[in-house]
Length: 135
Length: 342
Image (cartoon, rainbow over all chains, first blue to last red):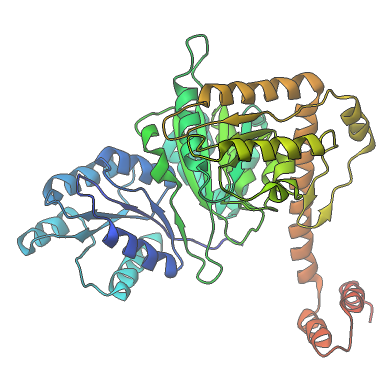
């Protein structure tokens, strides 16, 4: 029995305290058969990258509504790389203005899923991105 | 770098990768485990179990904090945490949320936290939890805290794995009849009444004390998924001679750390007790025996299935379904067919 389970870390970096969206996404990924590690509110990029390392996750989802995404996301990507985890897929949820989207995708974020995104959209995108590297 | 060498050299990425390989039951994981096995057997395995919402994760957080920053005459210990949460029986997915309560431990390289889903096991831990603990043991963690899923009455597998089992209760979780039922209270080496700042703590403590007085002295006999454990004669005899360990009942408030030094003291007292009475060795033997039995079961089962002619298993199942054969007759027939008779 060597079934490959997809493991995803869902984290809320920064100082906003609204995690309804993060919980909805966590639950949708769970219902898609993934193991979701939820870290709770007010995480620093250092805490997130450390958790991603210890849990050996395939993907990290960041929920940010504070507007600090252009500071927090590059930092998380940098730390993942420094830890030897450049293969980990990073996706975003929350509030990201349109003009920042291409910048973030350029940095290597695999997708940005704001309010109203259907769960099928991100579930299949995340699974596809992970299985593409694993193969 | 080779993963096993990496783990022994303290590489955390190698450790995390290996834990996944072992958890997924891969051949690579098994061969790394075989290399690491001689380096295991040093860590103190401490189980933390109890009902959902009694504060297990918060308590584990405080325990790990204390072991990292102990009283001045103590050495800080390296702590690994294995936190188990349930897998959904319908989708196979899981939400692992124990880390939420463990944020105080972030940034400390002497702590390693790993979340696990049960992946279908019903005993309160996952079937790979023991192997995961072995890898962490080989990686040099002195203390391995294993937090079970929210356990009710019969999720007692942790007692077979851990040297010391802490059962966590909280005020307002049922009357004294709950306390005298079989199962989880019997496996406690240390009983903790957490949330001791809430009203009703005296009642909870009294009920626990009452049930303990009824329960001791009793020899520990472990049941595993309905299997009755046959205790080898010489260990059964030594168990009788061994001075009795009466589980202490301690009050804690995991939110602010009240009572944690006392709890840590009780854990080390229990270890000392096990070491001086031969109980440590006995538990190690029990644990290894369970592990060997389980592995034998799954391996023999796989081999047996392969030895059957194609369709024989499904055929027997169908016969049972149509009431042409009892389960016992089906077994006899399957064994005959695997040996090439009938």
